[in-house]
Image 1 (tube, one colour):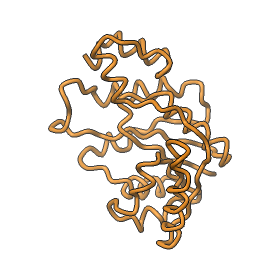
Image 2 (cartoon, one colour):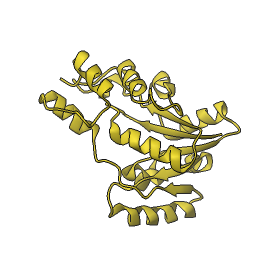
Image 3 (cartoon, one colour):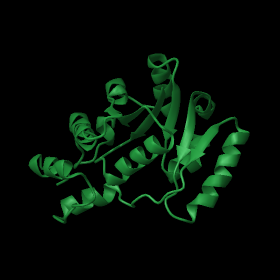
Length: 198
């Protein structure tokens, strides 16, 4: 099977994340996309942070119509510092005979060689990136060539993803502005019902 890891703070997960997951699933004929929210240690949480359980709830609402997607609490259960190489090592134990992919946004793709133990990441997964705008594609291509020289396998998806940010969503909620169209309506209702990001 082809299985992708898509990690992030997902605070909250939004339509840009979902668009990215769907696009890679289609392009790479993925069998499974694992949505993996990161654990935020209590001392790093902001006043308007959500609980790990609320993050998982929102991720599950976001993918309920995506049969190929699954939410994993692997990093939340581990707590402490969650490095990507550790999560990939754990996934390789769970899926020893499957091909792993790592879905990243443009910023992550450009810095992945500086992460903790990048050689382990390159060994375990194909690094997938997507440009933020038209200018990014040439930068991503150069970075892709550089990553190849370090032994990585990469896949760049040439598409425009919608520019939504979790920060923008949290700010809108805290200022009583609409987040309609930025997140799945079920997530919008969940945020309102649970009084999140106020």
